[in-house]
Length: 240
Image (cartoon, rainbow, N blue to C red):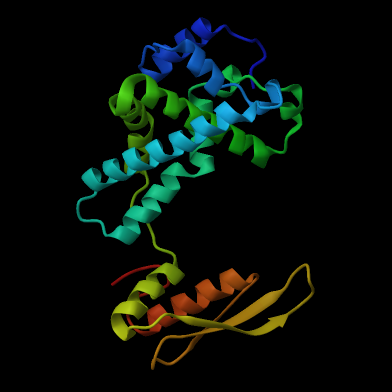
């Protein structure tokens, strides 16, 4: 986080080239990039409200971008791509890329946060910045910034892959008008290294079984086994 406190005008100038936007209201930008830890008791109000708005603007612009870029993609693939582009890890990397953390005002205690919380903080700051771009310059300003940093990432992702449970959920609805029913058949091994065995059944189709070191992993394995057996996937994770 910031080691030197910039004035509102200095902050706006520092972000002008990085965002491609000349800010008309530097004070608002400064409020958006001042973390609760650096302010009074009501400190989080502005920061959190900007973050809330920025999250929605980002989701809208990225969804629109993906619809245009992948006209043949189904809703499930678009959702996977969207989730990968708007998660905290992606936002944190982009925040680092534009040097945003060094511009955020935050209390000294933030430096001692665990890495996961620091990732979330960087992501939140980027969402706050997007909100200010939207409020200051309209959707066009926010869209220009988002396309600049997210579009190359969307193209570099390659083919988005569905997880087996998602694939099975959709297939089950179409093929049997049912939802997959997962049942834990066994849990073996010590608490620190368990092995779960899960059975999944879809309508009148024969059940399939999978194992994994977590319940979710075993459910994924069972779903993949059923998809392969029924010819929906030629091998685990691949479609015919």
